[in-house]
Length: 276
Image (cartoon, rainbow, N blue to C red; front, side, top):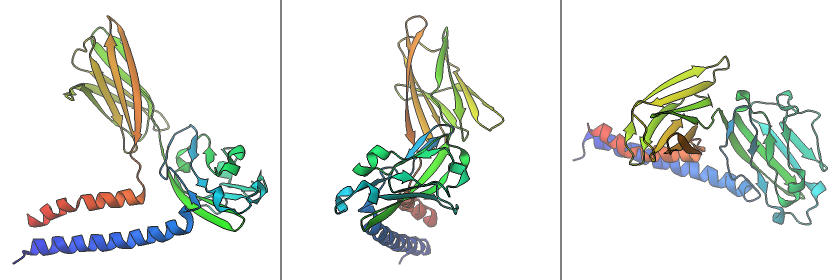
């Protein structure tokens, strides 16, 4: 005889998979209508505050019969705005009704349009640029669109300094406020003292110093991460006072389908919860 907790758990599992089937059906319909012609290799890019970002959008010119460049129409819009972000038609930008927020900050790659590139370059990214964009392409009877969710953060590689056996990492631009973790190559977590200084714009400078003595020929890993960006930096002490360092970035932004996958992955946790 199943317990009440087990009945509730399996009912929730059934509900989750019914919702999964419904979402997959909707995605399949949307993809069949547009993704075969228009698609994006990155639907959740993270723009670095104050720098440029490319919103990726590609279309398949092979699906256009007798394609001519002057047949291609490209329109970029943003959810919540009534005016377009960018419009391209008749081989030229049509910006008469462009939203003022994007004036002088957007452009396509005209030489690449014939090859199927409808990507948008957005310059000097600001926090208000964050949101859902749609790239729509039409040409000679073929049309389609794809949505891209732009996230905005501030991130920078740390600069390492060494004073005798003291190792410090300083990164001048982070938002949202990050966490900092130090490890050695074996994976052991090291104690460190970390301070955050934010400017009038709310951007954080991170200064983190190892509490333990740093040793020559040892490699130390400093991980600075917030909800959107992870910066993994490795610093190797060389000689009496030298060091070498490198930083790799990864991004935590996720498409709705990835978030839904996360929901499925926590199902075992629900099981444990309802049985306790």
